[in-house]
Image (tube, rainbow, N blue to C red; front, top):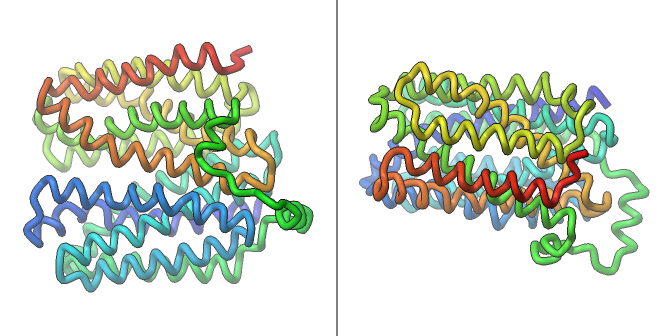
Length: 386
């Protein structure tokens, strides 16, 4: 099992480095083609919208046909998306590139389903933590590589490099990663006349439905923080782009450490529900403190509990979802969960930006804290905190 965990960790890391290379360059590349701030926002939202549609489809495909075929398809799809970026000669090509990449971004939920297949109740959270750590490391390393490649060859070179990483990902899955779905599970799926799990079906399930509602509000609050943080840093504290980037990298490092090192020990001692509740209380207080941070020093201190809470949440919510459903529908459930999270990333930039401009720099943090504060009450009523 450990060997397969290491392979899936490296595969997700390669994938997320490619993603991280592109993201920081996106607003500048769009502006190069004359995009307005609104169009830039729509371009960023197009990826999440495509992911929201594609993730459940790819995950259900993996339930029926295996994790490896789904991962291979997504890697070649990402290759096409990055090549479109490299050859982009218009804003339309950028939209097409991000849409294709978004449809294929359901590979993360497939990787999570793979982890669920090869782990048991005892060590699943630790396995999911590795996925989160790979995700976070990619978003730390990728932007640095992207900046270097841009300096060497403009906007096209980072796209071609990310495409090459996607091909590396495809070959790694093909030649190094064994299939995780057992013959028994395949027979179970084949014997079912109806295994399709839609979002309405999922929401009607007491346990899974509660977790999806939780993921939506928590994810929306955290996405508001992520999408508005740079504006807050600029307008409220007067921080430069460099300092803002360093603070976000600092948050990423803390989150990665929590997921790679701490989550296994926490999950061995506390239940999923208690960890979700604990992270919600912590992030509610952190968001309020962020909203009214008067200086860089205070901001740096506030980011510690916020990053810890985010690291716990990202890992445990996926673990809890995988445990709430039968084995033959794990992929579908994780795909729906990913789609719900993607939906928050469509809404958050618009909602956060509106209250930032209409009310004040503190408003996004307060709004996000109100959402997670409601989840504290929600957790008290729906979760088993014994």
